[in-house]
Amino acid sequence: MVKLLRLAAALVIAVTAMFAGHRLAYLPWRADVERKRLEANTFALWERRPPFASVRARQNISDARGYLDRGIDNTGLYMAAAANYRLLDDFGHAAEMYRRALRYDRRPELYFHLGLMEINLGHRQAGIDMLIRAALFNPFLIQEIDENEIREKVEKAVHARRYLPWLDQPSVVHQ
Image (cartoon, rainbow, N blue to C red; front, top):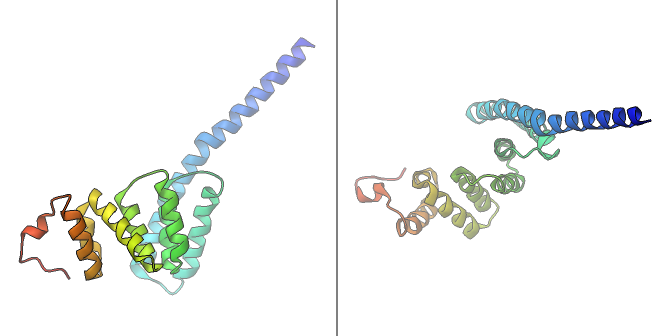
C-alpha cells in the first residue's frame, strides 16, 4: 500500500513537472521563435506591400494570437500583431495590442505607435499625450511624426522638459 502511494505521488510530481516545464519554458521559447519569424514577415509586408499582404497579415495575426490567447505574454508578439492590424487598417485592434504590450514593457516605440493609433481613431489629444510620453523617452521619435501641427505640439511639450538638439539649429527644416 505504501509503495503504491509513493508510486502515485511520484507520478503526480512527474506529470506536474512536465506540465510546468512545457508551460514555463517550452511555450515561451516557442513564442519567441515565432516572434522572430513574424517580425521578419511583417517587415517584408510593410516594405513591399504585395497584393496578398492582407491575407498574410491575417495569418500573422492568427499565429501571434495563438500564443497570446494562451497567456504567453511576449511584447514582441503584441507588437507584431499590432503592426499586422495596422496593415489591415484595423487601428482599434492595433491600439489594443499596444496597450497590452505596455503592461509588460515601457518601450518608447510602444507609446509612439499607440499615439499614432489613437490619432487615427480620432482621439487626438490622447494620441498627442502618448507621443509626448514616447518623445520624453526618445526625443528623436519626434522627427518620425508626419503631421506638422502634431509634431510641433509634441516638440513644444517635450522641449520644456528636455533638450532637443535640432531646435538649436535654425537651418533644420522638417520634411
